[in-house]
Length: 266
Image: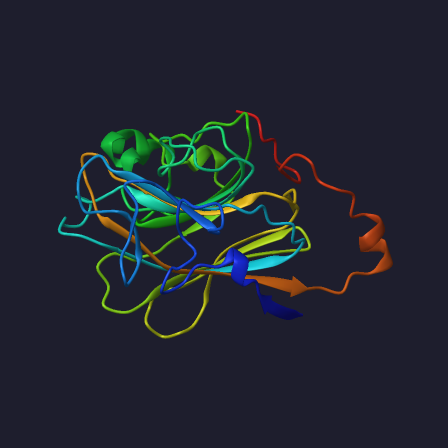
């Protein structure tokens, strides 16, 4: 499998492709701002939300996204929030409650959730989950939406979670990365957050059907609690994948996002 960097869908220093002109490839929203070192999606202040979105729809069949990010702030553990998201969606530049993007989205969201809302109801959680299924925050999870599904903020997205992993990503001195690969309808997310320059598995889900022609973006939100949510780079690679004749024949165009063996109805 070969990979080719697609510069028109990538974002890195010195961030020359961001702006309001029609010739720019990326568009800022809300409280997001560009500095010399990062795109700051939100500052470490209450009630902020910001995003950066690609202006161009992506028509690649197989792709890989490497995101270099940093989440840091003054708040002590569990007194910070709320998190950030990486998107591949039909809609773009629409504000909302899902980490700074609209609810009932159509496409893929990968969320870096830094605040456990459900722990407010800790007794209910103890009854509902075993120690094995309880989460540790920050937590990374993926969700596919078809435009009819709401993200359950109070339960930290658990009802619609495809898979996830805990990821201690706040206030680290070393670089932190998330890797999202979509190949042959398989969604894989890996993380490199330990300063070892090694990817470790977070989730791997077969049978994920995403249409072509959606938009990449990243967003973040703060509420009563806050953090700096920084995007340092976002690099998209086109993957060349050899397919068998059977796979080619089975490869009818996807028009609505779905996941095999999972009802996307809530």
